[in-house]
Length: 217
Image (tube, rainbow, N blue to C red; front, side):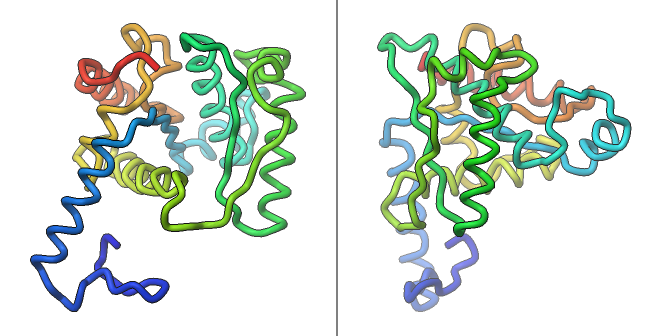
């Protein structure tokens, strides 16, 4: 979609029609703006994580697998949102299906988090607020998981650019990021790990810039 390629029988260049391309982008922007959702985002700086944590064994509480680490950090933030929501309800976690082996691995890591907890959140809290198993859905053009794809790409580009710039839909997603209070406790807003001093300064600046637009979950 971004590169105007043809995918699954759909020509996103619209026959190289520039006017249609602009109209399509405007429709996507409108969909993102009007759809009610709360965004959570975690970006792991792979090289820094491997060098600072995996190779040194600096923090024995952290998973050494990057995907499992991202799950822990993301679920901690989701739990905070559930705990402070006006309606008390169990959280449901849905993954886009990537294949039977990959899905089984994700289920295993999720179960591990629910059973063992994390460094900052006890296991019983995960079990009190989350369904015990993941749900999976196949990739489909109209499913809400497609919004997560959009956010994931923008977040990837933002982190890759050292947390500066504004990827394609970034300004819209920034208005919908979960933010509680002043966002300074480390559990709110976009999380980038591990942080350098510069990365932390920029992520805090991002929270401040979107704070006025981010309502309570």
